Amino acid sequence: MKAARRIRKIFRSKSVLEGAGVNLKRAFGFSQVPLFDPFLLLDDFRSGNPEDYLKGFPWHPHRGIETITYVLQGNVEHGDSLGNKGVIAAGDVQWMTAGSGIIHQEMPFGDHHGVMAGFQLWANLPASQKMMHPRYRDISSAQIPKIRLDNGVEIHIIAGSIGDIEGPVNDIFIHPEYFDITVPPDTTFTHHVESSRNAFAYIIAGKGLFCRDDEPFSYETEGVSYFDMEADAYAENETLILFTDGDYITITTENDPVRFLLFSGHPLHEPIAWHGPIVMNTREELRQAFDDYERGTFIRNH
Image 1 (cartoon, one colour):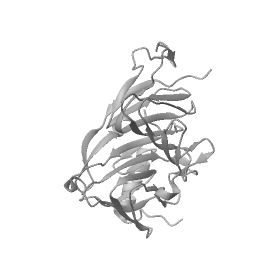
Image 2 (cartoon, rainbow, N blue to C red; image 1 turned 135 degrees about the vertical axis):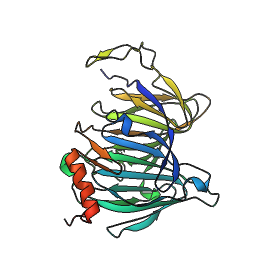
Image 3 (cartoon, helix red, strand yellow; image 1 turned 120 degrees about the horizontal axis):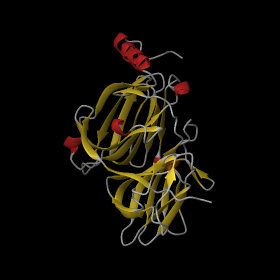
Image 4 (cartoon, rainbow, N blue to C red; image 1 turned 90 degrees about the vertical axis):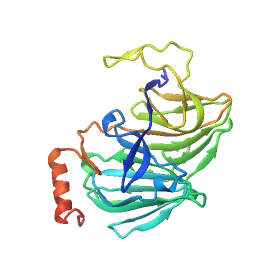
C-alpha cells in the first residue's frame, strides 16, 4: 500500500553574509546535516537591491561536492581553473562537479531593473567519487523540458523525470530530482517519490497546503514517533518543508497559486568532514585539501 509523505520539519530561510559580501537567505546548511543527506546546503539569492549581490563570490576552491546554480532573473558570470567561463541567464542552470578540486568565481549581475534571483544547491559526492575529475555543465533554459499537466500544473524538469520526460542532468550518482513546479489556484498535485529518497520542497512564490490528508497522522517507524509532527501546513515564500519517508507528496492550493522547488536524492549514509567550501569524509582528508590549496597543488592532473 502506498504511503503519503508527511511533514518532518519546517524551516524558514535565514539571512547570511557570504562571498565578498553577498546578502542572501540560507534555507538549510551545516547545522541541519544529515537531515538532508545527500544534500548539504540551499541558498536563495533573490534581491532587488544590487548592493546585496554585486560583490559576488570571487575566486575560491571547492572539493568533494557539486554546486547547482539555477537563475530566474538576472545573470551570473562564472570562470574556473579549467579555463571554462561564461554567463548563465534567466532559466539557465550551471551544474559544477568539483570532484578532486576546482577554483572558480561566480559574479551575479541583476537585470535591467536591478533584480537578481537565483538559488544554489550543494550536493554531496560519495567517497568513491570525491576525487573524480572536475567538470562544468552550463544548461540553457531551452534544454530544460517544461511540461503542463492536464490540471494546469507546470513543471520545469532540471533533473529526474516526469513520466517519460527526463531532465538534461541524468548521470549523477545520487540520481537527484530537481523540479521547478507551479500549481495553479484550486488544484491538487500529487508527485510520486521513491521511498528510498530524502525529499524536501522550498517555496518561492504564492501559498499552498502541503501533505493534506484526511487520515489521522500518528505512526512510529525505526523507533521514532511522528504523532507530534505537522500533519499538513500552509507554506509561503522562503519556507522549506522536509518530508518524512513515504511514496508520494500532495500539494493543494485554494485561492492562490504556489511555486516551489522540489528536490529528492538517495542518501549516502557516509561520514562528513566539512569546512567552508570543502566537504570530505574524514578530518585527515579535509586537512590534506587545505594543505594542497596552500601549497598550490590543489588542482590535480587526471
